[in-house]
Image (cartoon, rainbow, N blue to C red; front, side, top):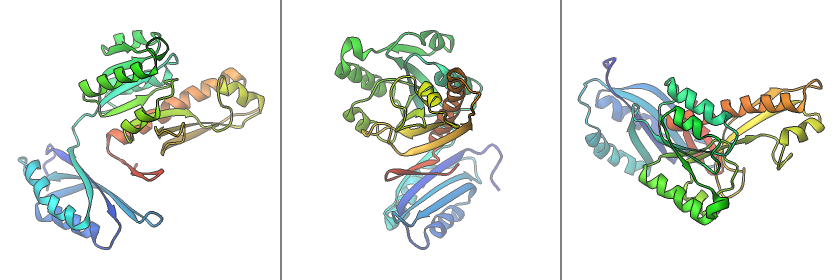
Length: 288
């Protein structure tokens, strides 16, 4: 069996669905004495696509990832697979963007600090300076990039300078209250996550929880999704709701919303950095 301290690897696969894919992958791993630690797969009848995520470990401590890639490539070609392999210990590099509200940022930084999120955070970007103290406290570089002062085009150019120079794998909009351009959304497709309240398309604009209170809502929710040019309509990753009642005030609804947003965003980020999400058209397949 695999040694307890043997490095684990994550194999992600997507292709057209067909009979025998799981058997082929399992046989490939078994013949090389690679132990399946975790496995999940899904065949979507509506799209005709197949998705699979496997975590495996080697019987021997000297696993050759380069050789695996060469050999698995032949199998992948047979099924016309899109696939990737990475160490389960690798830490994606995440850039966080925020405006003034710091609840989502604070939650992400806390979970990162205690080791609950296996990622590195090279930088925090904001169009305001309100959250600079949080970055300083966690010894993370803070970049004030203001579209209002620089212009939207220059601000996004600066953003992508940071994304490229810092080798960023994921951008997280932790209540970043600026709309990214269609061009920026296209460049960040599949690697930019946003969070917002789940009232949309209702209660748009400022003070959504006050608007919700005026309508007497009974559920407060949050949605985390990938960013696309269609504002707040990207593929959904995670959602949650909490009850509300007639005794709530705008302040208490806002507090419920803050907690829910922070929790859902952290959940979505964790799912992404662990390679558990597959894009499936306008939807996602999530192996939680």
